Structure formats: C-alpha cells, structure tokens
Image 1: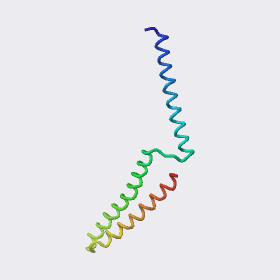
Image 2 (image 1 turned 60 degrees about the vertical axis):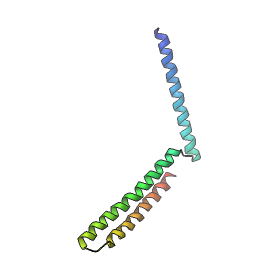
Image 3 (image 1 turned 45 degrees about the vertical axis):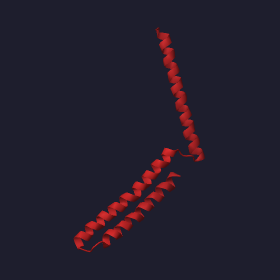
Image 4 (image 1 turned 135 degrees about the vertical axis):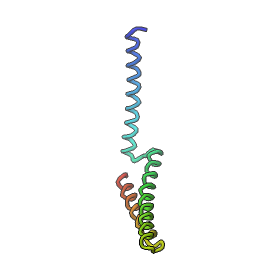
Length: 101
C-alpha cells in the first residue's frame, strides 16, 4: 500500500462521515421547524413527566407519614402531603411540557 492510496481512503471516510452528520443535522432542524418529534424523544418526555410527578408524591407521603408518626394522628398528614405532592408534581410536569413545546 502506498501513502496516497491510504490518504484517499481516509479522506473518503471523512467525507462520508461529514455527509451523515449533515443529513442528521438537517433532519433535526426539519423536526424542530415542523414540530415533529422522534419516538425516543417522546418516550424520554414521558419518563421525565412520570418522575416529576412521582417523586413529589412519594416525598409528600413520606413526609406526611413521618409527621403522623410524631403526632400519632393516623394517616391524616400522609394523605394531605400525598395530594400536595401530586399537585406540585402535576404543576411541574405542566410547566415542563409547556416549555418543551
């Protein structure tokens, strides 16, 4: 193998790679302009929304349970803070989805 042949192949591989990157970039720009989203982008958004609702709910329930154990009040605060967490999580998810569009 001679050196110019190797350089030519390397240059061809670089050009092919650059072409694939440009195609991908153009596709992303088209999706951004037209509002199209990929399947995996939608799955990622659903996962983010799920976590943003479930974590405040779980945190509220745990905090309420801790207060209930301190005050010996049954499950009053657990349910109260569970619903506070649900409301907070839904507000967070709503804001995230609104900003994402």
